[in-house]
Image (cartoon, rainbow, N blue to C red; front, top):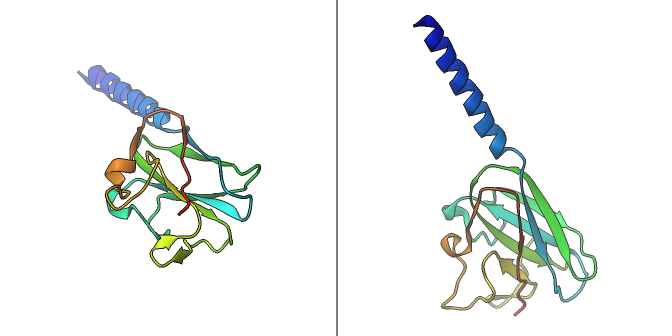
Length: 147
């Protein structure tokens, strides 16, 4: 009985370690192209909670990266992510202030969300619509929108 318990504990420990190792090293590569110019940089915000998205002031994100712009495109890599549901919000921050510049209610700078090709009054971004399941290293492309 004693050896059975030791074996069972070792088995559980090894399998738990393997499962944890599977979650380590997952990367998410996010790219955006067709920016209207190469001014500023691109803010890539990653979210993993429904109550944090969309986040107009970039305060509730899970991880955030800034990407340099080359040839009107930008790419970043989020590393060491656990399995889960995620959504991405992108800002072409042309004036490098980290905020969405607006005229009336519409953004002047480009914005984008995972799984969105357009945005309108009947098609507003939500975590449910923008989210995707990340189980392995993945690359996504986000469409940038200008109004």
